Amino acid sequence: MFRLATIDGRSAFQFDDGFVDVARVAGDESLGSPMNAIARFTELHALAEKAAAQPRIQGTPGICVPKPSKVFGIGLNYKSHAAESNMELPPAPLTFTKFPSCLAGPTADIELSGDTVDWEVEIVVVIGKGGRHIAEADAWSHIAGLTLGQDISDRKVQTTGKPPQFSLGKSFDGYGPIGPAVVSVDSFPNPDDIGLWCDVSGERMQESRTTNLIFSIPYLVHYLSGICTLESGDLIFTGTPDGVGMARGQLLKAGDVIDSGADIIGTLRNVCVAGK
Ligand code: ZN
Image (cartoon, rainbow, N blue to C red; front, side):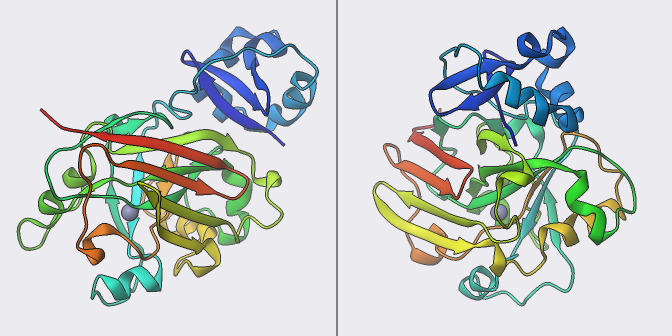
C-alpha cells in the first residue's frame, strides 16, 4: 500500500504524521519526479513500507499528478445526477477533456470565472501502466491508484452553443483540484465501492458511493483504451453524483469553501476567490 503525494514538486509518501521523500528512501533520484514515480508504481509498495520507519518532512501537498498527458472527464455517470440534469442516461461514457493546465493542489484557491461556476466531487483514476485495448478484467492492474477531484465547471461556458462543448468550461486554470495523494488500489477494502461527499460552506451538497456509477471504473479504462492509448499518469474524472449547484439554483461565490472527501483517500479544501 502507498499514498503518493508531492511536496515542493517532489514525490513524497504521505503518512498521518508527515511525508517521506520517495527518491531519498529509494536511493534513486529519478523517483523524485512524481510522473516517474507513478510510472513505477509497482515498486512503490515496498518503498512505502521502508519509508514508514524514516524521519518525516513537513509541507503542504501540491498536485499529486502534475503533468498527465491526458485528463478525461466523464459526464452523467451517476443515474441520480443524470436525473437532476434532466438528461437521458448515456449509451456510452459521455467523455470530454479537462486540459491538464486546469489541475491544482488539494488546498488551492479557485479563482471564479463568473457567477455560474459549480462544484462536482469525483473519484479520479490515475493510470499507472498504459496500454491499448485493456480488458475490463485487467483494468485494475493498470491503475496506479485513486485520488479525489473536483470537476469545477463554468456552466455558462459549458452549455453555450448547440451542441454544447464541455471541455473549455471545465478547463479554466484551477478548475481541477486533485489530491491529497494517489492512493494505491490495495488500500481499499473494495475499490468498486468508495463513498464520496462534498460540502459547500458547511452544507452537505453531495454524498454517494462509486457502486452507483453507471459505467464502472474498469469499464471506463476498457472503453477509453479502446480509442486512445492510455499512458502512465493519465487521469479519468469518473463523474459526479447528484447535488450539484446547477440543480439547486445555488452556484459558487467568492468566499465559499468547498470541502470534498472520500473514504480512505482523504479530503480537499478549496476556497473560492473572485476572478480578475
Ligand atoms: Zn464532472
